[in-house]
Length: 191
Image (spheres, rainbow, N blue to C red):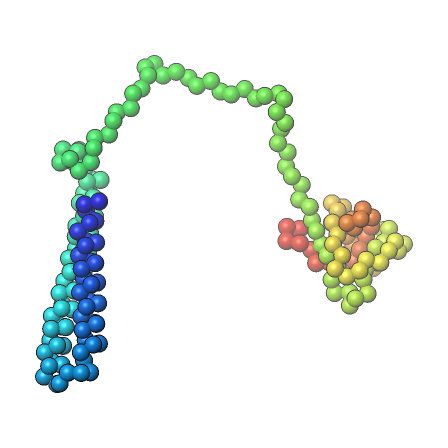
């Protein structure tokens, strides 16, 4: 704490001095005659030079403190002798070292399994007509799904037929079927 106290005090004194100088210039600048204004500005210049010196001293002290700390970290034995840091306490080791038993797995504990990625898609760009859900790719029509309907993409491989790529999907209600992929907005992990 003592290493940073003096630079902080110098910086605060510098700020107060600069504020007082500015206030003096603002208050007396317009009311004074030319000679008085010149004298006031000369005093303000001296005060501002003093402020700059105070800030420079604060920065210099901080840099000097940092340099001492860096030197202390480079030469720890000398730092302990000078009293800058306390000596580290030696670690007490047990001889001969004992082995730590490895934990045995609990047979009642469930084994972790990977969570499957659920691929979602929504129906888009049908012009409000909706999309036909079919029993097979290009097959019998099961129902018309309105635009914006959320679907779950199933793990079956896409099928290309009649110029379309067909994806097997499940509607939120549980109905399954095939739809044309051109009208689906597929979510990020499944693109």
